[in-house]
Amino acid sequence: MTTPMNDPTATAFLRDVRHPLLVLHRSVLAHLRARHEAEFGPTSPGEFLQIVINGSAYRWLTPFSTLIAAIDDVLDDEEATADARIAHAQAVVDMFSAGTRDPAFAEQFLPLLQDSPEIAVANGQVAQRVRDVARA
Image (cartoon, rainbow, N blue to C red; front, side, top):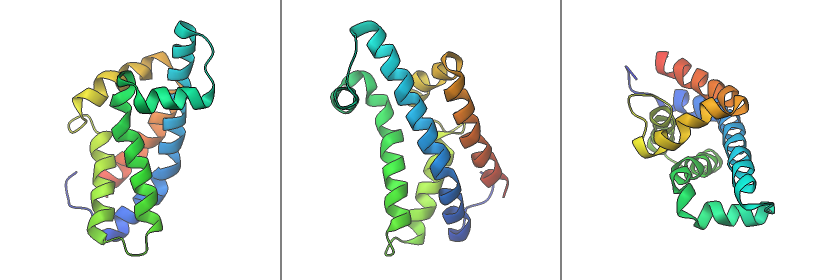
């Protein structure tokens, strides 16, 4: 990102990117669940959620899940600071930009783009919003 983000830009970006992030997260979980079930047999949604939350195999997904929850919190909290909104917006940009992406996340996430057209399309929606805000 070339210039620091201001609060109105960060807030608009968070509102705009929230839904594409949810779609991407849902697509990743559906793909991971299908892969898990292919190996271990049918799993209820609740059982799979527990596996994701408590299992080490999916720990790489935690920062993504946490970021989405944090975005909801900062957008819903009337007392949230401009710095908090800007920090969350920057965290999204960092997570979905090649130069700043966490290597542990990238190692697990990037191959999914090749494995699943749904994940690739959903990622494209997030990436477009990240590119747009980075240019602003």
